[in-house]
Length: 137
Ligand SMILES: [Zn+2]
Image 1 (cartoon, rainbow, N blue to C red):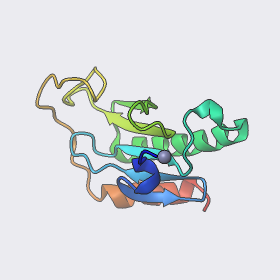
Image 2 (cartoon, protein in one colour):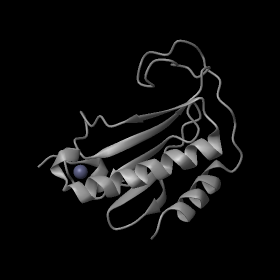
Image 3 (cartoon, rainbow, N blue to C red):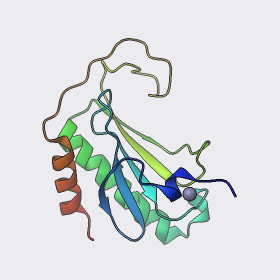
């Protein structure tokens, strides 16, 4: 049986969690505020979840989007669910700036420039405070 990294480890600093999913902050200076919302159980696709659980997960994704917008003030948010390498439902919530290294391409594209993004003080604390206020648990 192959190992799934999202089942076996936290992959990032967990800012919030409940028995259903977790929010992990990706400490990535090129994209400050980048977070992942990760389902706690190994499910392959959103449509493998019952509708109520899809809604529950997206409620968390949108709470993270709101927190990242308020704390980081990006030019744009990218939401992505890929999972080609790790087929375990998770969402990327990625703040984008027009001057970041890949804009307007996806962050996984070849960089176009060195890139500049703001330095945000106390980012981890501010994101976790926002999430704790927005979400139960
Ligand atoms: Zn898994």
